[in-house]
Length: 357
Ligand code: CP3
Image (cartoon, rainbow, N blue to C red):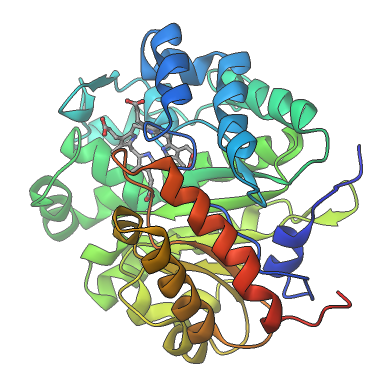
């Protein structure tokens, strides 16, 4: 394998010294870029874009051509697993994702298969292999999956939700059924992420987008426990390098201490907690990734620079910070402001590191 030309992202995840703070953005390939919209139109639908390794590779690289980002993230979606389980996924403009056959009963759960990464999901593995080859060591490639709780939320609701009526109804009324679903998802996510690692992913992130809507106790029982099961089953080394694991629970600032005990190398943090407090809670066991409010990117380069300075100061000196937004970038953000953001992180972070790194 080609040697990495820029490994500061992997080094920061392992809390090793770096020259400047590495930065990438959740959803960095997407609709805020006109070149993404053009490729997406060429592909037809969003899922057609995910299924075409060459086009998925093209959109993965697009943000790297514009900005000096320190990592690439596989272009795909967390809903590829429920799609491969046969739930009938469609993305309808204005409605977000929808499933034709939601999971509502013990019988529905029993009938779900565990997808084979080199079978129904081979298109994702092919995208990973194509992107690794095309990156040729420029920056590391991140693989990802949804958390069991977050995938179950979409599968039981049949799409997005504001109320969580079906999923929480199942949690309180048929907890055993939900546990069986979560266990099946944990097994599926483990083989899926190990497939991505075998195909060339150099770090993996678990997106627990909806973990923050739970009580602290339910979070441990229905979300964290299954992420722990995944972490325990993941391949930790590939090509002689550690494969770091990033755990991101949106709204998870309250229980970072619990998350830090899972064996994850890094915790993703949203903007509802200061990094200085997050660092105290996580207790120097893990690196932290985050946590600028993505809406700052609606302001102007000067205001963005101020906010970057404040996030850097909040983390403070020492290794183990990967700069990111607290959640995905919004489709209506101006790419010029993104350029100012990335430049500010690299420029303003140098004093936080020893220059000999
Ligand atoms: O970060 C990246 O650049 C990698 C690509 C990525 C996408 N989705 C591409 C995408 C990643 C990591 C995801 C994860 C994902 N997908 C999550 C977790 C995100 C988080 O930050 O917590 C969730 C909840 C989903 C499910 C999903 N997929 C939703 C709610 C939507 C939006 C629907 C809409 O119309 O707004 C998608 C579609 C999607 N996934 C798009 C992209 C670029 C937009 C599709 C398009 O081009 O129309």
